[in-house]
Image (cartoon, rainbow, N blue to C red; front, side):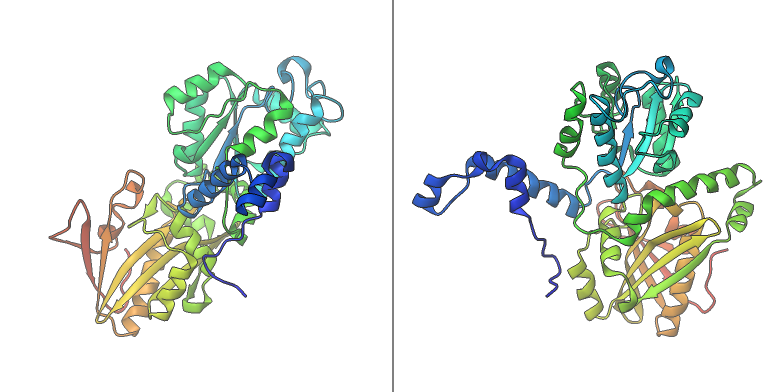
Amino acid sequence: KEVSNLYLFDTNMLVYRCGEEQVRDMRGSYAFDIPFTNDFFVALCHEWFACIQAIRGRSRKCIVLDLDNTLWGGVVGETGPLGIALGPGYPGIAFQNFQRTLLRLWERGIILAIASKNNLADVQEVFKKNPHFILKEEHFAALRANWDDKSDNLTAIAQELNIGTDSMVFIDDSPLERERMRKEHPEVLVPEFSIAPEEYVRTLLSLKVFHQMSLTEEDKKKGRMYAEERQRTAVLKHTKNKKEYIAELGIRLKVFAGADNDIARVSQLTQKTNQYNLTTRRYSEADIRRFLKEGWHVYSAEVADKFGEYGIVIVALIAPEKPVARLDTFLMSCRVMGRDVEFAFLAYLIQRLYAAGYRRMTASFIPTPKNIPSKNFLPDAGFTEKKGGTKGTKEYALLIKAHHGHA
């Protein structure tokens, strides 16, 4: 039977990883009915902490990788695409196994990007000609192969992908590059990687910052979605203005209401969305189901355009206080920012609320260091700021009228 907010933990896998001889305590088992050593409980606490961080939306989203002596052995500029260490034999097989691990993370929705001091043509030759390469160019959402400072490249990657640098992990075998990244971006997780290549996988997974408590369809498709985003970026460069760009994309919205929502995805978005999120309130699947039972209006929308689907990327949770509708949560994935879908979505919701007898909507903006991109949404959508907000919170109200829309 399915139970919301219940997560099963595989202790057998933890025993396997730690080594049974290291975690079994026969004396403790006989004397106290506690068959595990302190080492086991320390490892278990680390796993629990990683799960709690994931539930609170604090997992890392993106791995930014160096190339030479990180994704492969050697320097491609010196050896050529077929001379690097990758594939059968040591150390090539260790680098190949590291790529397999990265691919598994990519399949679970972790974004991969490259920041390497290399000639772009040399890097592209590796993707095209080396038969032992596990990862393909399309697996990387952003590729910066140049001679610029890597901290600048990381900033550019974050801007391109519309994610915060505090959601990134930087992996590089060079101590100098790691130290410079820590200095320029202290919020980026920079693990020690001056290690033998056979230790790469263990070191990466020991970070325990990629945990996910549920895997949605959007997670599985995320890598492909970022590849499609490159095509959209190309369109943007050849259009004159934002209006022409949006028209060229041919954006479509499919709105889900009530029980038709993907509850897991709605909950996940409340936990992971930081930038375009008016209140950053975090809700579990059990919370969303409770809201539905209490008569809340739960809406989400799937967005698509001519290049592909973004999946479910926008959510509104509305508390019924007739004749007032209180907009408790309004959020949107950073992947569709700048396309005005939030205004189209809100206009649709307002028509539904008007038909249901609501004549006024209230909303709050609770500022955080991360949600600055959403601070003007309510006034831009026609809301009027009210007096009396507390602790930096801004309160807004909107008269609901028929055919309300955003100009």
